[in-house]
Each structure stands twice: as structure tokens, then as C-alpha cells.
Figure 1 (tube, helix red, strand yellow):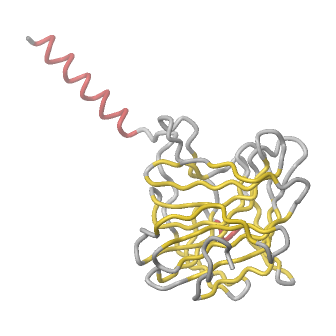
Figure 2 (spheres, one colour):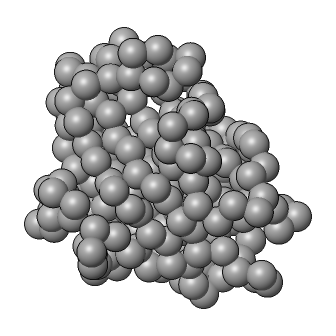
Figure 3 (cartoon, rainbow, N blue to C red):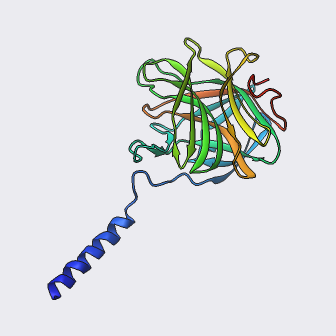
Length: 238
């Protein structure tokens, strides 16, 4: 009996020690306060020090990604999950319409830039968010990618837009639905995805630059705007 008690005690101690060790996929992405104004938009929250990764000159926002950083909650048992990308966010009242638009140029590299992207974010919390990416794909192509996360992330590859190095992004909500769009000329919009807006009243939207498998991705956002209206036609994005 004494031996069994000793073994049991040792197992409890081991379990306690193991529980205190941080997991590779343990979240480190809590929102932090910041005070940054870019293109007239006041950003008050950041993830992973995003406010230190941005600058603006002549209306162009430059966002330098953290090396080897991404934001993704892998549905396959979290095998490739990451939460170390820098994200800059501003609060919106989700009980009212909103639209965010910008010209996005991603920091693609000819080699080693797999999944590099400039992104738009819609963020409620670490388990409920969406990103719209202008990304370097698996075969080196430049394409539109969207990721919607409800507990875990999906991963949707959309149009290939080679040889474009810039696109226009738009995310719009009328409070009932929220939709994402891209355009090559800023006039003719293609819908990427639309779904019911079930985000909470207090919501954040913003920008990011990611470099999951490289040391560098410098993305730019030009003409970034945030308005309190919505597109008139959710299919066409106008």
C-alpha cells in the first residue's frame, strides 16, 4: 500500500509539472492597448506588439511582419497552429454598418516567401475572427486567401491574380451580413465570401502582415479608409 501511495504521489507531481509547461499552441495573443493613428484611423489595440511594426509616409502604411509569424488555428489537432503574428486593430460598433478599404501590396519573395501576405482582419477574440489575405501560395502564385475562425480555422484559396503584386481589399457589414471583396483596379469588385454577422457588438477590425515561413514580409496599405456605411449590393461589392 505504501508503495502504491508513493507512485500515486509521484504521478500527481509529474502531472502538475507538465500542466505548468507552456504548450507550443498556447495562446500568447491577448489584446494590448496602443495609441496609433494611421490614415486618420485611431488604432487602440494590438496583438504581439503590432504598433512597433508600422509606419506611415505620404499616406502609405508600411507593416513589417514578425519573422516566421502567422495567425491560424489548425483544425487538424492544432498541428500547424500559430498565434504570433502582429495585428493592429481599431474598435468598431458592430450594431452599425462599416466598410474598410485599402490598396494592399504584399511583401512577396521569389524564394522562401511561402504564405507571405498582407491582410485585413475582423477580430472578436482569439477563437472568433476572420482574415482576408493577399498571399504567396503553395506554388509561388499570388492569390486571394481567406480564413474564418470559429474555434478552429478554415483555409480557403480563392482567385490567382498573377502577376499582380497589389490588389484592393474591402470588408463591409450592414450589421446582418459581413462580406469580403477584392479588386484589381479599385472599381470592379469580386466577392470572396459572405456570411451572417454574428460577431459581438464590440468588434475590432484592422491590418496585419504575415511571414509564416520566412524572416521578412513588408506589406503596404495605401488609401486605408474606414467608413460608417455598407456596400449597396453585397453580391457585387458596390
